[in-house]
Length: 206
Image (tube, rainbow, N blue to C red; front, side, top):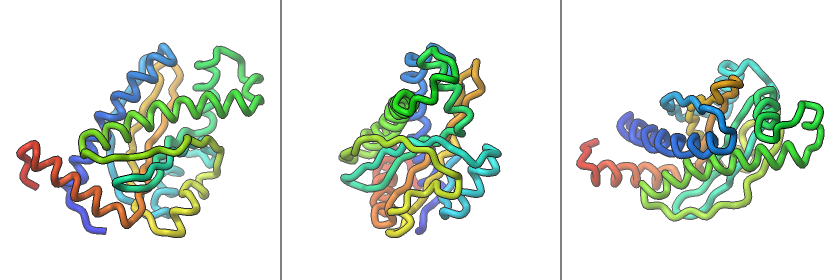
């Protein structure tokens, strides 16, 4: 997979816009100030991704919301939150104690809603600015070990993993999460071509 720094920088800026939209929506849900850091994009292998998550979070248990997509390009977007942070987030949103988090439906439903809001904001921004048509499957919540972070079907068929290290946090809770795009290798060139067209439309010479 060949890509340029300019292409990665352009995608980084697009994702940054999407994360900003997601953060605004999350602020309305939680009534907490949402801190954002500019995203740092890297294209990684599954093993490199696992090492990054372990290094940055220091945890093995993660809460994950998957949003599969198809259309002009295909893959899965993930919101990844350390499970201990997910506990705090659910407690904040439902205004209940941690003992209530044993109800799987409440926990899964709350985190799925958060993931759906953030990921749709990011993917919607990508599709709008790059003029892609995307169809989304229902978001899916699960808890995983870091070792299982890559969707198994994408390991099988080959994946370009775009790790958007975009820590966002709720100011009063110290909650952080990251966004990961698993893009099928066959779709990666389409994405790069769309980025080139987007830069050309802005008068940017790559």
